[in-house]
Length: 172
Image (cartoon, rainbow, N blue to C red; front, side, top):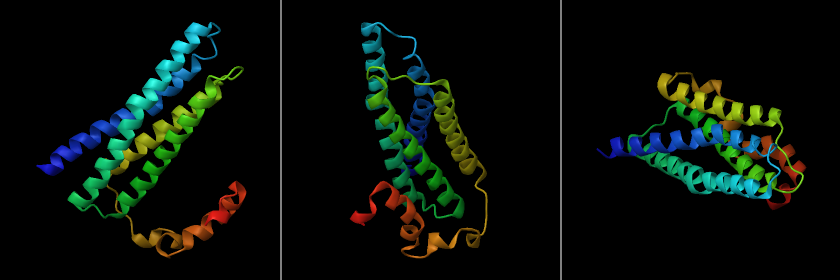
C-alpha cells in the first residue's frame, strides 16, 4: 500500500512540476506587452507565486517521493539511470526558470519569443522523455554506458573544463 501512495504523490507532483515549467514561459511573454507599472507588478506577483508556492514545492515533493520510491520499489535498472539524468535536466531547467524570474522584471528587460520556444520546448522534451522511459522501460546493456559513469573520479575529469570555465574548480 505504501508504494501505491508514493506513486500517487510522485505522479501528481511531477505532473504539476512539469506543467509549471512548460507553462510558465507563456507568462513571461506577457512582460513585453505591459508598460503599466500596476499591471507589471500584478504579473510579477503571479509569476513569483506560481514558481515559489506551486512549482518549487511540487519539484521538491516529486524528487523526495521519487527517492523514496527508489528504495521502496528497489528500482535499479539501466533505464532508470537514464530517467534520473533527464530529471537532472528538469532540475537545471527549474533553476534557469528561477534565474529568469529574478531578472525578468527589472527595468528594460524583456523575454524574446525564441527564448520562450527554447525553454518551453526543452521542458516539454524532458517531460516526454521521462514519460517514454517510465512507460517503455527500455532495456539496454550496461556496457553501452560511457566508462566515466562507472569509474570513481571520472566525472570530475569529465567536467573539469566546465569547472575551470565557471571558476568552481578551486573549491574541489
